[in-house]
Length: 291
Length: 237
Image 1 (cartoon, each protein chain N blue to C red):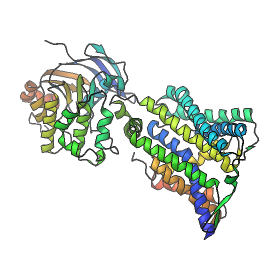
Image 2 (image 1 turned 135 degrees about the vertical axis):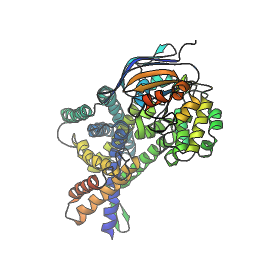
Image 3 (image 1 turned 90 degrees about the vertical axis):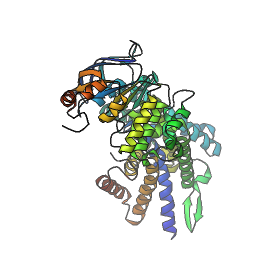
Image 4 (image 1 turned 90 degrees about the horizontal axis):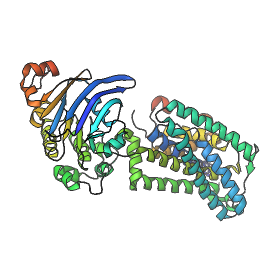
């Protein structure tokens, strides 16, 4: 029983991390039809700067952790806005070129980060509570998972409020459905593009700092490792669907954890099989729109 | 005679590299409804989309004396061109109220006018637009364009696929709207054209082949059949 509880809660926690990365990817694709392979670079840079912030403020303090999350969000948003304005916008409607430039940026960013911070992983301590466990129905749950779940729930709630209650949120929801019609109402949809990149970058930045604490280190490849699963989650949930990304994040991660625990560490394999099944049987994903 | 509100000269439009409008020139007077007629695939919708900047276009488009052919779509709209697209294109997951709120461009949108014209939409303001009937979606689409003080409305096949009673309602709404703003109307239903339009532009194979008084064209059985491929009653030849 305790093993099932442990696997379930850690699966939800890992899903929370996937969601932080995938939410931005899904919104960006939904509105702009851009497959952003540089999204992992936003995450890695935010983690590195978050690490620097924590080092400066005291690695074991809660204030340092909160500050590094805030700084990570800002850095992720700023890097994403720069990417959209300088690299994506000039290639508007040229999707192949956009993919190539984001792949190029992702590769260049890894090289740049290794040049600055070295190729060896940098370990991070964080508040001692994160390394402790909380007992739930006999299962000892590492506390980092509660932090991941809380952060993802807050980000999800903030995103839903933003999308439902603000004019720009309305523009983004409408743009995901029919971008041309939004412009035909007199709205400059390019501002929404920049905003979506900023939001996606901020969520990835938060995810980057938390991923660093989850893995207890940061390296130049941190973002790329998580990006693969974020893409899987985005496709399974339905490109452009925030709710789909949230559901798929938990589904993929829980399945992955159970397969790892009960099927001899085959979690990654099972996830890829799930992706193939979704692509074959329901190509638009769980909550994606019909083509 | 007063200056035209819209003048289109030598308009050429292409979609995915294929020329769909070859050479279209016409003028729209500053009052009343001008119909754009033609057989299926003649280039009527593409002409409207070209004016809006929704497809690649060349040529000269002058709105109230100012060229707008180099402007992106949102700037064309901000200059005062309201657009009601073919197939409504409401945002299905957004509520009726949200669809309308998105369309509001001016500080004092004409909410009362729209509410009087489409009282049903007020009752259904919280309903998802995608769950409305075709006629109700058409009302949303028209209402979005009528919320603002436009210089001209481009309306594309507003009665397409609607029941006869709803066609009458849409025609009534267009007639009311045209009292405050000139309308360029693409319409296949010749009864509606006969009732609403003063002038008409006939397009065939991406070119203007006839312009004149709408009633004169529709009263001429032979001309209607030659230009539109239908009897003036609206039946296919």
